[in-house]
Image (cartoon, rainbow, N blue to C red):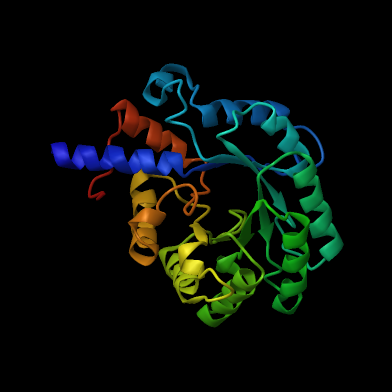
Length: 274
């Protein structure tokens, strides 16, 4: 029993360290949302009521990043310590083919002082994707670029493979499964396709397997869910890749279960395995 508890605690801490806390409510791209981002940043740091002691003031229990709309990126950056990144979304959530719009979003993110761009690939029009991603990559040179594929909207694995190749060719630093705005978000099958694409891709001096990260997003609500994706990433990219530089989880709802595990109040569902 001690081993199971220890493993669960370790998995929760890994998930926490690799978590992108997200607030992308409809409408907050144009107005409002500051109160929600204030609360999100407090959660990212670890200041959450009676659970604060479980995270500690040193930042050891902080999340990897917060992910927000571009217009709220500067607000978030001003409320976070340097070791917690700010990510913001571009071409989100529809993944259109308008290069000017995607670049405009990206430049706003750069100007806000954020460190990461999560851009939606034009998944309905893959022919438009190379030019759009190349323009976004140029516009955020030096920042981390996560490319959202929206795999749940793709017809088959061949389409997913093509989208992965386009993103990797464009210089993606992460492949991300989904926006979290569609009925199908992260799935183990999609994760396996993205991870396989990273392993197989070769371009330039640095193979993707040694550089590119993976981010499952949407529908990951428990530490058991996170453990599955942690395991798949370790199997494909090596255990050394399971860190915030190469692995992220986009699932704000997961924080509740992580907190319960770290506080010792977690009650696993019958039959759950970690």
